[in-house]
Length: 80
Image (cartoon, rainbow, N blue to C red; front, top):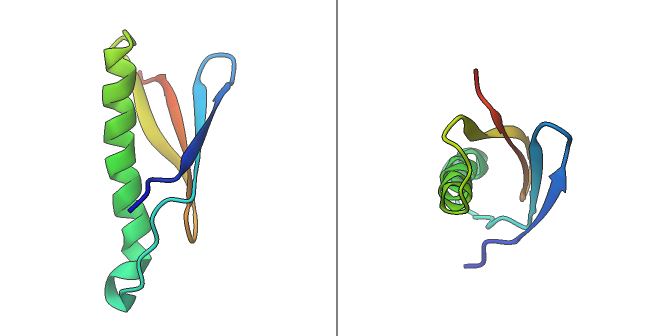
């Protein structure tokens, strides 16, 4: 299973991560929630990756948009 590709953009006071070609599943009962669940996992991975590069704990990855069937947009920004 591949994890797709991402595009990282500087958006002044935050970072936008556009992730394309996330894994898709065919299970009818689970299919509708899969992209949401996988996006949460990707947020955790992005948080860990940014922490390892020295980002402060005040900056957090959140899901901005989920675009079925296989794309998601994340924001890495300061949380109040």
